[in-house]
Image (cartoon, rainbow, N blue to C red):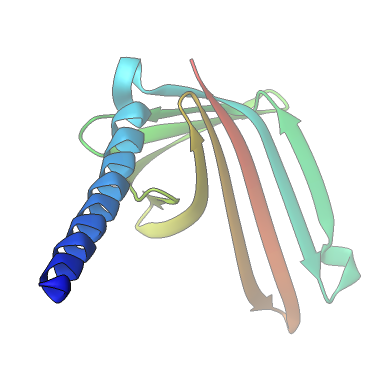
Length: 145
């Protein structure tokens, strides 16, 4: 009898944990496209470090553009930096802590921290170019419009 009660309790706890995590994932996804789906890029920070010091740089931009998420899993990102405007289409998917953007058939996976109308995105990529080891980091702060 004790074993049966233990199993029922364990299954209940696991079911609730799974259900709540799915709900958060769904809430994030809906919040992305809800109410027009437009998010202002409050800030963008880019850092690159390399074993070749000439390749090192760091830049920060305020009000650097916007993201537009659509309910069908597509969207647009517009960068506005130093008067230049660049727009790219993307598709997206999310979990409760990751956002995947596919731009020009290239998937970019961002760590995602979500508060109802604010999102922090972070991506780190490491690669080799011209014999130098390079680490490239991007951080976005987004706010719902």
